Length: 241
Image (cartoon, rainbow, N blue to C red; front, side, top):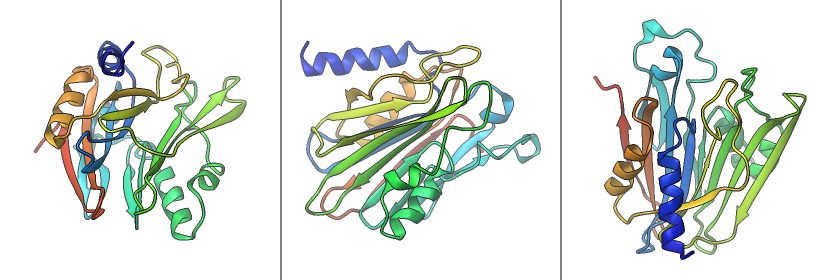
C-alpha cells in the first residue's frame, strides 16, 4: 500500500471510531515550513463535556465552559500545551507540568514520565499520552509516549516512541482509547500515520470533521515555524460564548 493511501485509510478508520477519547497528532507540513501539533478532547459525561480550550500566552489551557456545572476538576482542568525554549509539549493531563519542570531543570521528558502513571479513574484507568518536539536548529526529533494500565490497574506500562526526524506531510497519531466501551479499552499498538496539510485551517477543519460529532468537545492546532520557532494556534470549541 502506498504512503498516501495508508494515510487516508488511517484517517478513515479514525473517522469511524465513535470514541477514541483524547488524541494527539504530531507531524510536519509538506512544505517543510512548520511542525504541527494537534490535540483534541472528547467526552461522554456532563463533567467532561463542560470544557473549552483557551489561549494563555504561549500556552493553552482547558477551562470549564459553565463553572456552575463542574463536579470534579482534577482530571479535566489542566494545561495541555506548554513550551520551553525549543521544546514543545502536548499532553492529555497535568503531566504537562511534570515534563515542563523537568526540561527547565535540564532533565529529559522520559525521566519525568517515569514518575507518572495512568489516570486514577477506575475502571477505565485512562492512559496518559504525551508528545514532545525538539525544534532546535540541529535536530528535529520528537517523542510520543503512553502510560497505561496493565492487569486491571495492578501495574503501569510506560511506552516511549522516539523518532529522529519528520516525514513532510505525515503525522503520527496516538489516542487514549481503542474505541467506545464500558470500561473503555485503552489504545494499543504503535502510533499510526495520518496526513498533515500545509494550512493550519485545513488541518483544524479536517480533524474536527473526522471526530465523532456527538462526542467531540474541543480541538487545537499548534504550528511551530521550523526556522524561527514562532508559534500560531487555531482552536475549535463545541461550546462558545
